[in-house]
Length: 405
Image (cartoon, rainbow, N blue to C red):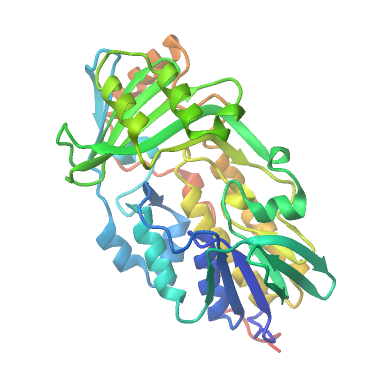
């Protein structure tokens, strides 16, 4: 591996201030780059659903000095209970037995992680909130960026860290449909009152092709609600209107069993409804010219894998390290992709189209899953998945400095 190279004031614009963007900004700034982050929201977004940090990503946050704070924020979900159509218990398990993991894995509120990442870089990185990229002119000597605010600036490199529906990806490589791989499921998420008094646990109700869930990250007055369902084609019309989304979900869940009616009623009135399809981004390449992608913008694995945040953290570390140790950006982009792609592929393959283990589509598949859950309840909880730790991080800062210039 080449040695660490001090950049000659190379300027980098990162689009997106969620996880991958600030993580990348941290490492680039540490290596001496001049970093700007643009974010369409007017501030760092708090709240959101719990996210997981596992395997190789734990080493990334340890090297960032965040591990102690993230351990304090760890949710410590103690039980996931699976219910049948009538609300009877099928099995109750530790979450590690389902997702694969060990006692070292972390589950934290998404807002806690984004706040910690922003805190690491806010004094050393320029943030442009309430703005976004309108156009990119990728030239041999740099990238001219036009912002929606009307401002224009030149940067040596631009990195898209702007999520599943990446604007940067669209500008440089075309419509999302070219890279969007629909996995056959849709979901609606929202918060509602914790009327069951749940604490540090989740409850999942299933019938073939549909599930309803309540998830309590602590013992508070609110819980997260989810309504998930299989659908052969993505409901493109529903994305045009929140009301159409509500009607689609309500029509899909006419059930009068368990807590489904209460969940549907809460979904109809929720102010924080989030509706989307379950999908992955699969691309033949993650860069072109002086523009590259990282995190969900390049390789979203879907929430069914539980690895989106971990891939974003690992990808940001590798991309920054390669840019800091390679003399030329194209060489660095190629090395980043070569190193990260096998890790990404292994994690994306944790779920395949129409084959989400926790959301069976047919009665027979549901019966098989329930039998498997009952068997899991008799096994130890620590069941690490090789894909989570399939990559050993390079140590860029302690690399040989013989080629430093």
